[in-house]
Image (cartoon, rainbow, N blue to C red):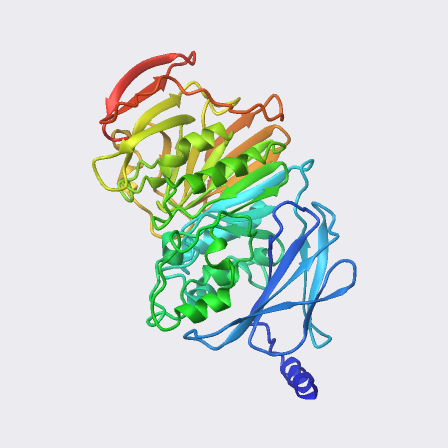
Length: 488
């Protein structure tokens, strides 16, 4: 112990913090309680770490060792703060062997009676100017929560990439155009993208799959077994699984409440077969249990409804559309496609595979009468994948002939991010670019917060297979026309 204290004293006296990654705020295994949050940090230094919250009590930090990486061995520490006042600012500090290393302030999670603001973007971790512009504008928006909708760091989801492309940009010591301090003061949530879990060769990339190490999220997801997870191979697969613990693969699917909204987060990568009844039942049950929530949102990486030429055939999450509709989902957020897209409110009944692998055909109903205000008849699908990575298909930006019938707006000429404001039964959505200029907005207003079962009533469905039947709703809400389109 004397050696550890001496080591800490020498480190502190030299001005070098033993914090390899400074503290950031997470949900932890706590999907509903707004009075709790988890503080996470990384260190290669042994010793007794504690976290002190607003009650002044020093909480011992739990240690999770990370070994067999291509960088030095280190530990992830976490501690749950309790007794927070929902929506209020709180102070916390981290100490090593009784000596304070770090102090910050955070914002407690909002309660159901409080308004909230969430910033959403995906495909961001490129360590480039567009990523930093979006990070700066995110800080200017003063969010309560940030949701990264996959592809957190490029291009292999490595520990080394997190240290270069995530933490310096979103967990900097001060707010500047080169990096912001949001992660230490605001809740960050995330779902895995393809680049987060693509690296399965642990011999060649022993510091891969960092997603399962560094995000502390609820463990209330479905039981995946060995089937619906990245198939790890190589010398360090067992060591990685030991380091990750139950987070692999459970951290990829979960749900939680924030304010008066319920969020259901899914792993959209193709190793998960969402046609499996047990997995579909988990989603349906999760949404059914969210009966008190005014708003219901879904988050996953690969969009089911996308007009971009890039990734067009990756439509596997369309199979879940009827479950979303029956569960009263308001908006589905995705990334993967590096631009911004908004669908008309829609309902969709899948009828079978399309002509190409990954495509899903079915009957589609569009609510074209929805005029950016009021209550839409259907689910709105948002692609917010312009968070920093190279933009996809800018040539389609003004060429509406290349958009699918379900697409209301398509912006691929600039990087952008989403702002979601909730205030009781009022929702305001805005899309801003890297300069803070507004690209899009819409509102949803509800008359009641009571759960009355399915909210949407699909029109006639063509379940005969083959080409999909597409129904367009006229200005009065009745079915104005019907056509058959192989493109959906």
